[in-house]
Image (cartoon, rainbow, N blue to C red; front, side, top):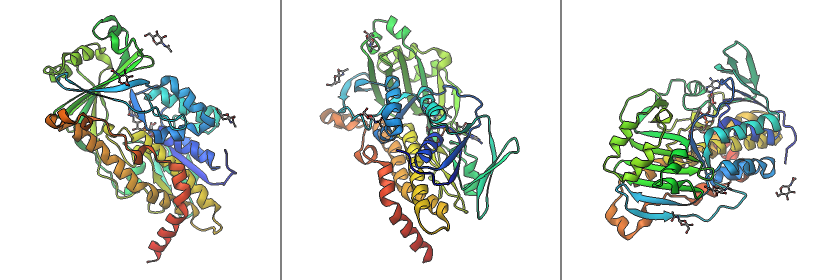
Length: 427
Ligand SMILES: Cc1cc2nc3c(=O)[nH]c(=O)nc-3n(C[C@H](O)[C@H](O)[C@H](O)COP(=O)(O)OP(=O)(O)OC[C@H]3O[C@@H](n4cnc5c(N)ncnc54)[C@H](O)[C@@H]3O)c2cc1C
Ligand SMILES: *[C@@H]1O[C@H](CO)[C@@H](O)[C@H](O)[C@H]1NC(C)=O
Ligand SMILES: *[C@@H]1O[C@H](CO)[C@@H](O)[C@H](O)[C@H]1NC(C)=O
Ligand SMILES: *[C@@H]1O[C@H](CO)[C@@H](O)[C@H](O)[C@H]1NC(C)=O
C-alpha cells in the first residue's frame, strides 16, 4: 500500500527507531521525507531492546511482512519466563500464547534490529538518509521550518520532526529552555556476550543448549534478568539496582564486575555463576535518568514536533520506549496525510502537528508510568502474599498497550480531534 504523493515536505532529525519509523511511515503515506543523522556510519551499538505487539503490528506492514521475517531469526524465542526470589526459590514459569504473525513481539539486539530497519528505509524505499549531518539549529517562520547543519547548510520543509533522542537539541527549541534530566535513583548493569563459556560449564550449559531461555531474580530494590538469544548462542543480562550517582545524562560508563558480584553475594549462587561468565570489558554501567513529562512536544509555530525519546524517555521496566517512539511516527504520518487531504488550504501541517500531540500525549504518559509501577511491584514484593498467589510477580502485558493499533486509531480519531482543537482555539 502506498498513497499518492501529498507534496508535504518532512525533515527528520535522527535515524534511531523514532526517526526511521517516522520516515518509513511518511513515505507510506505519500510525503516527501529526508533524514539527517549525525553518525557517520551505521554501527551495531547497544544490547537488548524490546518491541511489544503494538510495534510488531507496525513492522509487519512494511514490505508485506518481509521486514518482520528478517527480524525473526534475530529475536528471542523462549518457552517461558522463569521468575525466582533472589535467594533462588523458584516462583513461577510465566508463559504467553504466541502472538499472531501480524503482531509479533520482537526482543533482540538493538544494533542488529536497527540495521534491518535502517537498510529497509535506505535501500528498499530509497529514503534519503544523510549521515555525518549534525543539526545545530532549528528555525521556523509563518510559512516554513527547517534545520541548519554544522556545515552551515540550511534545509527547509513544511515540518521538522526532532527524533534526536534523550539529549535532544530540538527539545531546547520547543521548550525554550534546556530541560535537565534528574537521576531516577537507579542504574542498570548490562551486557551481551557469546555463550561459549556458559556452554563449557555443565552448571550453566542448560541455559544455552536447548534454544533460548529467560530467567529473572527479584529482590529488595534490585532485579536481575538473564536471557539467551539466537538459539542460545548469545547471552544477555541486565541488573537494575539503586544508584544515586548524580550525573548529567543517561549514558554508558564501563561497569566493574566486582561491584556486581558484591551486590549479589547473598543471592542465588546461580546469579554469581552467570555474571562471572561476562567478559569484563563488555559490562556497561547505564545510569537511568528521569524527566518529568514535557509540557509540550510542539513548537510555538506548530511546525516542529518532538518524537521518540526526545519527547518522552522511558524506563526499561516499561519495555515500551522504542515501541512508543514508533507509534509516534505512525501517528504523525497519518495526521499529515489526513490534513493534506482537507479542502481548506490554511494551517494544514500545523493542524496535523497539534493533532499528533493530542492523540499521543495521554497514552504516552500512561505507558511511561508502567515503567515505574512494574519496577516498584518487583522491588517491593510481598513474599508472603506471593506464596499464595505467584501471579503477583508476573511481568504485566496489558491489552490496552499491546492491542493498540496506532495506524487504525489515528485514522479513526483525526477528524474529531482536529474539530475539538479548533473549538478549543475559538473559545
Ligand atoms: C547508540 C545507542 C545505543 C542504544 N542502546 C540501547 C539498548 O541497548 N537497549 C535499549 O533498550 N535502548 C537502547 N538505546 C535507546 C533506544 O534506541 C531508544 O530508547 C528508543 O529506540 C527510541 O529511539 P529514538 O529514535 O527516539 O532515540 P535514539 O535511538 O537515541 O536515536 C536518536 C538519533 O538521533 C541522532 N542525533 C542526535 N542528535 C543529533 C543531531 N544534533 N543531529 C543529527 N542527529 C542527531 C543520534 O545519533 C541517534 O541516532 C540506544 C540508543 C543509542 C543511540
Ligand atoms: C503478502 O504476503 C502474503 C503472505 O505471505 C501473500 O499471500 C501475498 O501474496 C503477499 N502480497 C503481496 C502484494 O506481495
Ligand atoms: C515453562 O512452561 C512452558 C509451557 O508449559 C514449557 O514449555 C517450558 O519448558 C517451561 N520452562 C521451564 C524452564 O520449565
Ligand atoms: C539450536 O541449537 C541446538 C544445540 O544447542 C542444535 O541442536 C539445533 O539444531 C539448533 N537449532 C537451529 C534451528 O539452529
